[in-house]
Image 1 (tube, rainbow over the protein chains, first blue to last red):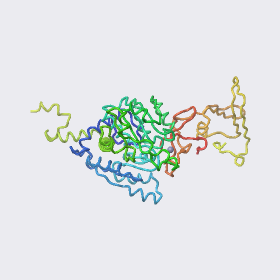
Image 2 (image 1 turned 90 degrees about the vertical axis):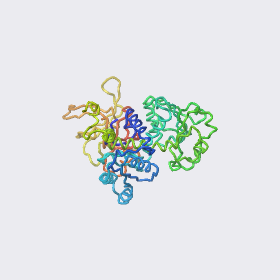
Image 3 (image 1 turned 45 degrees about the vertical axis):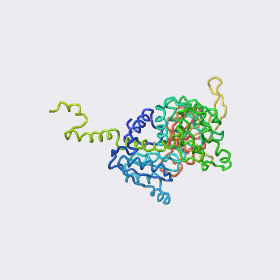
Image 4 (image 1 turned 180 degrees about the vertical axis):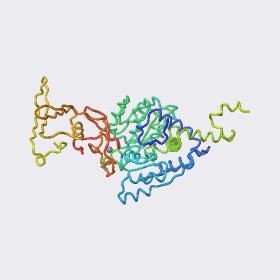
Amino acid sequence: MDLYDKDVVSIRDFTKDQIEGILDLSEKMVPYALGDKTERTLDGKILGNLFFEPSTRTKLSFESAAYRLGCDVIDVSEMSMTSISKGETLADTIKMVDAYCDLIVLRHPYEGSARLAAKFSINPVINAGDGAGSHPTQTLLDLFTMREAKGTLDGLNIVLVGDLKYGRTVHSLAEALTMFGAKITLVAPESLQMPDDTVSLLEEKGCRPVKTAILEDVIDQADVLYITRIQRERFPDPAEYDKVAGTYRIDNAILREAKSDMIVMHPLPRVGEIAPEVDGTQHARYFKQAFNGVPVRMALLNAILGGELRWRTSTRSRRSRFLPSGTGPSSTTSNAARP
Amino acid sequence: MKILGVNEYNIDSCISIGIHVQSGKGDAWKDIIKIEDRELDGDTVDKIALIAPDATISIIRDYYVAEKYTVKLDDHVIGLARCSNPNCITNKGEPVSPEFTVVCRKPTQLRCRYCDRILVDISNNLL
Ligand SMILES: [Zn+2]
């Protein structure tokens, strides 16, 4: 997995091997994300958070990830306000911000803005959500959470529930899951089912998703139940929202039908989709999932800004305390032969 | 006609249109647009390829077919059509040309390189 200096625009830009590589590195990052170990592999680097719309959680998660690796963070979001009021193009704003930092994290209301930013920026860009477009770091942390709980991603039975029409994070998640041979079940009321062109994308990759409106029919086969919030603001017609709001609610009663090791995930915030009584059960993974945003983003930042080489460099510098100066890792094997 | 940029005010030569004309070979049928005194540039040919992927273009000079070729759609389409997604960044006054990847040739389907959406109604989004 060589992601050095690479942009992270869409999960589609990644191969299965690259995704596995990021997840492996994320796993190594967990003790550092928890603060149990410390590491400053990105000492001296600067991350620029450029948020054209508020998303406190995503922003904090990137900040936390950066600080855990010794990377400084500047919030250049204010530039978004001035650029909008002055009618500056995103392309120009990006070129300015690019001069202040080593990596740009972009959140923007228009779809495709991350791809555009990556085109105009010399430094790498990470897409932290572009409108109804993609949000690849969310997809990666979702995959990480599943693999962490299940030990593997291969052949999992995933049930996606809720707004499968407007919520495009589930589209990229479903697409990524097809790389791992997942069995996907789509649970939504007819008006919120996954659009046909997304379903045909899954089918092109050999997945045969099953559509249903009734969660009770399929919950017993699930390894992972991924439920999303039905967002009022996404609906052109409020009457349509009222019809489907609160259709699905996970509580202990419905969970009695589930496998004992089935996990429940939710990108949060939840609004009634999961009863609080579920929080204490072995099924609940949504808070762990939120935490996992930190190690996964640490892995990405580390790989993009320093690469694995940098990671090894830091190991070497620690080891070098025990070795004569000027001795690199290549010479450690011959160390024993030294007089 | 829109692609060719011709209308009654800006062209002096003769335009003939034949619909459902018998083709020379067997019982195939074709539609024909014949324009006098006009050779097509690359962009125009590419746009024709977008809406009529099976079209054949014949350039006739001095009564003889001087060139004859079928149009060919490249894998990437740049600057020929705008994205049909109103929320796409390419529709927001940024200094970029819309770019598409051809995901299907029959029927022609283009996916926006920026917003990832399929372009709907190609002929009405030509630039
Ligand atoms: Zn687009």
